[in-house]
Length: 121
Image 1: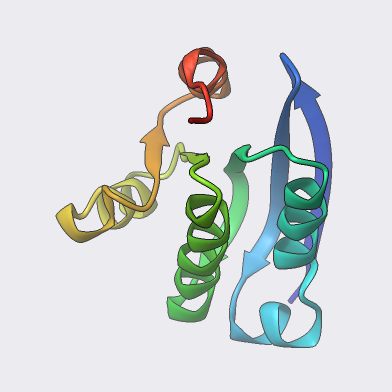
Image 2: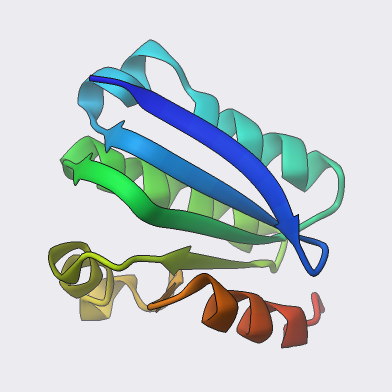
């Protein structure tokens, strides 16, 4: 079980790419995803894209992690976009109770375009 996190910028929006498994084991051993989001938030950037395109496995703890980081971003009236090309993850993430927490996109291009238009209040 491994988790690799890489951060890039697309149109000045941080894109956090998650490769590997976002599970209880990987989120408990290290808190890299939350740490990365908090680091970006401290810099005043409350528009964030989390790219799950290379995520092989996502369990309940991984989903909880995504919910936690969306709450951090929302506290600052920001917006989080999640890129998913996995049908199962997309169905779970688009579940009606999660639509207020984050927006799910099919591609990084779509997420970048949409979040670039978003202006923090």
